[in-house]
Structures are given as structure tokens and as C-alpha cells.
Length: 360
Picture 1 (cartoon, rainbow, N blue to C red):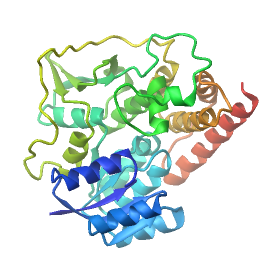
Picture 2: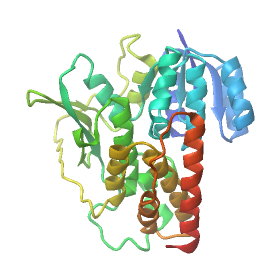
Picture 3: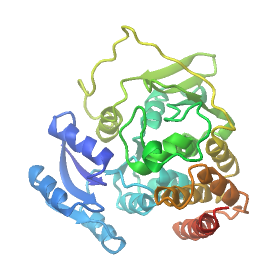
């Protein structure tokens, strides 16, 4: 039985993982639980799962906790940029990493994968889109390009978004997620982060990664082959499958993780996305094309702008304007270390914060 450390245990991904263990869909022994808050809930979970170690996160103690609690695999479901440091700590301890924190890849880039290689650790994606690609590419070295699906969020085709509230933007039509990722899904910034993540995870250039709007969220990703064929992964919109698949990592045959997909009355639709309607996704493609510090700046500016929107300091439509203005700066500094990432991240956050203050 593998030992599992869960970072972000009380969030949506962590909760889904614990439900999978509870329902015996995932055969692991949980040795550590980390959460940003919810002390009472964390203690209750530790008691339920006979988990010997728990931590309410702070930067001064996370590393020592991970070192003391060296599990076979860590599920990193920490939200936002804070997840990068945790990912690096896990890899440095030689743990395999089931990665639900896309910012680790977006910000860390090659630094993250160099750390994994150095410590003979594996990075296994948890996002439903990247999990699908990860499995579709197995035994298929002749892949030509990747196709990532997007639900289109709650405002697809709707004009006049100036007065959208944070509550409306967080009301995702398909997935139950945290506020930040739900708002990012409404602007397709989250899909932009996934495009950047796919570029690094699968060593694909930006011009070989497509995004298509697929409202049903049943086809999670597709892979185009050089012979012209396309392979797709289909399943109900349930994060249990990619989480269990990542943590299990082909160590045992999985049974009935999610309900079987019924084709009775099933309709699947696909459409192109509009560059004017979703400028943040277009900006993400540019960040992947340029690499260097551009992905770091994109992520940082978006986090700052979304936080300002949630605090009602800026309008919904200002999010894209602020990220665009930040991306117009020079982010050509090379990233070769964690320290480089932090420097560029702080610079981008400072610029975005200034723009939020003056409402551009």
C-alpha cells in the first residue's frame, strides 16, 4: 500500500481525494494532511483516517513537515502560486508528485522538471485535461498535437460584462471548484494556464496545442496523430478519476472509479473560441511562445487582478486589461532557479497591483 501526503486537504481536490479513500476507490495509507486553515476540520480528518501528521501551512514549517513526512507520493492541491514551493519541497525529498497545482508548472517551468530528474521523482498531472493527455500519449510516440477542451464558462457568447459580480463569475456551469479557479474558468485564464502547463508537461510548442469549446465537459482532451487520426478520453465531469489515476499511477487495476458514460441521448458539441471574447487565453499562448519570465508574469498578474475583482476594487472586464498591460512589459529575464521565479513574480505582482489601484 502506497503512502500518501495530501497538500490542500480541505479544498475541492483534497476533499475529492479523501472521499475516494473513504469509498475505497483509492488504496493508500494517508500519512500527512496539510491545509491552509480549518484546524478543527483537519483534526477530524486526521482522526478519521488515522493520519499521524497534520499541519496548518506556513512557509516556515512546511519544508520540515514534508521532510519528516516523506511519503511515496504527494498530492499537491494547494491553490495558486503558493503551491510551487511545496512542489519543489516534495521533489527534493524524492517523492513522486501528483500535481493539481498548475501554477507549479506555469511558474516553475524547466526548473521544476530539472528538480524532478535530479531526485528521480515523477510528476503526474491531476488536471482532467492533462491527465487525459498523459494517458493518451502512453505508447503513442507519433503524436502530432494536443487538443484541450474548455467548457466556455458561464458567460459564453454574452456581451456587456462590465457589471458582472464575483458571485456570478464563480458560478461555473459544470464543475464545483474554488472561487479563484472558477473565475479563471469564466475568463478562460484557467484554460490559458492549462495551455502553458501542457507545453511544459508534454514538451509541445504553443502552435501544436489547440483549445476547443466543449460545453458538456465529457471529452477532456484529445491527441492528434501524425496519420490524421484523433484519440480522445471521455468520462463524466468528475475529478475523482484523474485524482485516483494520478495517485494510483498504474499500480493496480482500477474498478468503478466513476459511473460508466451513457451514450443514450448524449450530444457532444465543439466550437472555436473567440480571441476578442477571451483575450486572456490569447495572452497565455503568447506567454508560452515567449517562455522566459512571461508565464510567471501572466500567472502573477492574473492572481492579483482576480483578487482585486473579488474584493470589488476593479470590474470584471478590468481583469484582462490589467493582465494585458502587465504582459506588455519586458519579461525576457531567464528563469534558472527558484529565486529567479520569485523575483519575477514579485515584479509582476507589483505592476499589477499598481494598475489595480489606478483602475487603468
